[in-house]
Figure 1 (tube, rainbow, N blue to C red):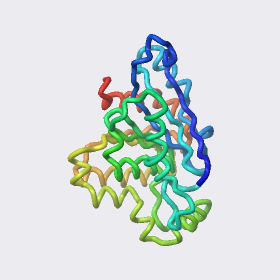
Figure 2: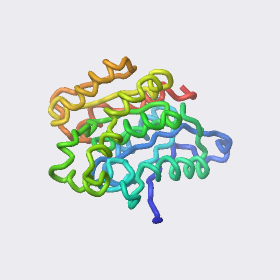
Figure 3: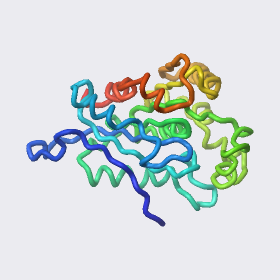
Figure 4: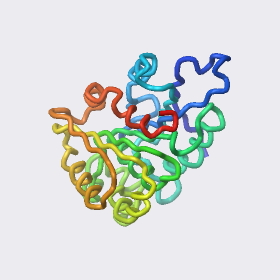
Amino acid sequence: GCEVGYSLYLPPGYDDPAAAALRYPVVYWLHGFGGSETDGQFPVEMVDAGIRSGNLPPMLVVYVNGGRATFYCDAFDGSTKAATTITEELIPHVDATWRTLAHREDRALQGMSAGGFGALRLGFSRPDLFGSVVAFAAALRTAEEMQTGPRAETWAKIFGSDGARFEAADPVTLVRTRSDELRERGPAVRLYCGTGDGLIEHNRRFHRLLDEQRLKFEHVELPDVGHDLKQLAARVGTDALEFAVRHFTCA
């Protein structure tokens, strides 16, 4: 019921008439808590440099507006529809408007903090849409932690202060309840987290859960890095994008 923006990176040569028949894979980036489509972005200059150097193939990057404090979930009362907006409106819009390779293998999902939570949640709930997922310092908070501090707004407005609603959306629950499907069809998963991040133990617990459920994933810990996207991006470089590329049909 309202306009929702997104920011878009187009690769060099996209508008060249000689490339008019070319289609491209897409990476969707989910910002962290309090961010927007123009704030909390994975550095676009890093994407551009990787493509121009030939280290990455040409791709589109869509910087999503997931709402300030939704954790990429629809509100219990329908007042905010962060997840539905992405899966039912934004992705079809992007595929209809831009020259994309419009199938799951060429669609990657990545995000930071609450965006990492959202990437795992959307990737696990809609494996038909995404071929790979990367979570940077995923905010894999417990129900108790969601009720305190700035997250209390999300707890009330999105989950209606209901632990069962939060649990249903939690990537931990999705792994436990959908492990057979996820083992069979993915998506491929990589986790990054710094050892100086207050969420490191949350990410390690999730790592152990994925291992227990025999799901294929990669887990990377970055020594002495805190909960900071600039630090993470500087250390990771284009590695996360290269992970996505390995699962693109253009690879």
